[in-house]
Amino acid sequence: MKVKALKGENRGGLVLSIMKGVTAGLCVSLIGILIFAFVLRFTSISDTIIAPVNQVIKGVSIFFGVFIGMKKHKEMGLLSGLLIGFFFTICAFLVFSLLDGNFTFDRTLLNDIIFGGVIGAICGIICVNLKKN
Image 1: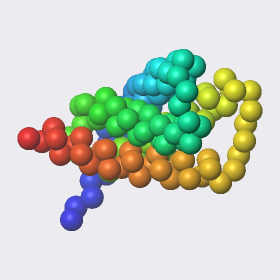
Image 2: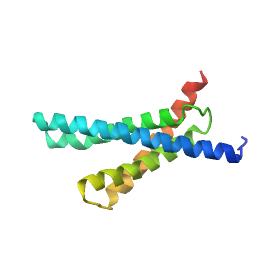
Image 3: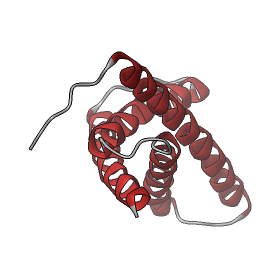
Image 4: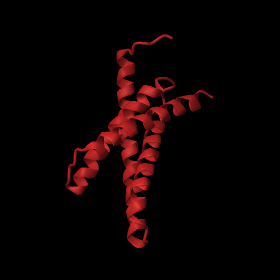
């Protein structure tokens, strides 16, 4: 198995793709959370459903971010997806903590970062292989 070294121009393109993916994922996440907050406001949904729905919103946001970020790349899906998921999770934590006014660094954040990286890596593999066909 050969491992290619990234040339300067490819690294710049990869960084730009990761930034695009993270930004797209954050936009989807913000929209998803706003819609869910609207639904919660006008319905009587149980509190136990909030955490699973938030995880689904994160997963969908990461998939969309990876799909947008990987549009022009046909290789390195695992690494790119992993990085998009990782940085998306950190940026989402910062954005939503700023909106909430409460920064809580705990085990949940570490679990979210791992979840984001794994979901991003899986989505990266899927997106790269979808584009090859």
